[in-house]
Length: 348
Image 1: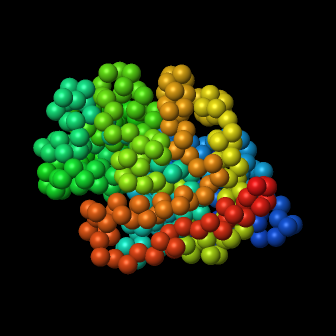
Image 2 (image 1 turned 120 degrees about the vertical axis):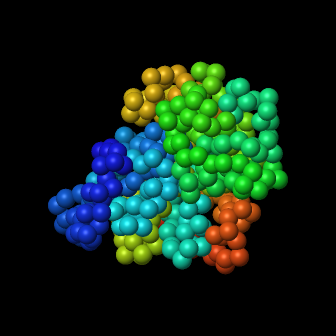
Image 3 (image 1 turned 90 degrees about the vertical axis):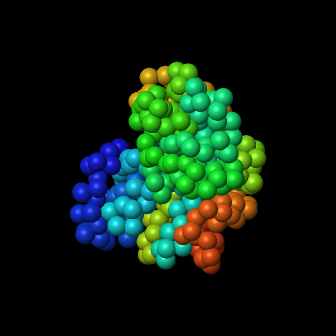
């Protein structure tokens, strides 16, 4: 079941008051009659970077694990993160970098399944500014679009600007979301450059509104831009919830690992056939093209890529005053236990 963030934010907090009662349905014992109900919020469900969430649901893998999972859409990963911390949802599909950012603030969330090893993000530049903005050094004096302040696009944009030799005051960041709102901001010259994902990338290029400046849709291009693999889209939960709900966490991991294997073994066209039709934004061929070009971003098995957490920490430490000078324990930001168990259950 898919719902919008506008409908969850108030309702979700009421769920949180129910605490364990909300999540005590089916996994506490073998004789439970009802499926376990869990709520997962996604930082932009229609974005291809978060495709594994809707795909897992479409393939029926949650149900196969005896779970009733409600997927709820949000405008940006930072909004999803806030709902998780408020206890309104049990899990988030968002970027791994939030686990490090929050640990620096004394809050602990854990990535259980790693969906991607590259951000799947692209820094776009408005067509009429393509001759002016040829690298991050040229961001100076311009307004840059991000999904939300404090979001992963915010983090990555600030890092690119830092690499380009700029200081925070040299440019402006404007939260414009994704999809139609991002496109409108670019058309109306509210932003001259901005970071977004598929299918928005393909739409912008096809309309002639913007061009690709920095591509981070594949591992190779990500290494060139960021200096290493960058684990991005992931499934994460509060560390306290993980400790008290290992059975539910394992079932979710099983479902998601099956999905990652499906992605690795099927073509972009075959994957697109399983997705909700409205995700195509009226252009299925363009959707498939974008997925084909960025499919390499996904991990084949849900495992954290070697060296990935270190790259993310390096990126955040470069510009984030919140992270700088903090002792970050990367081992507490993710776990491989549930993915490893899933591999044993599903067969290597």
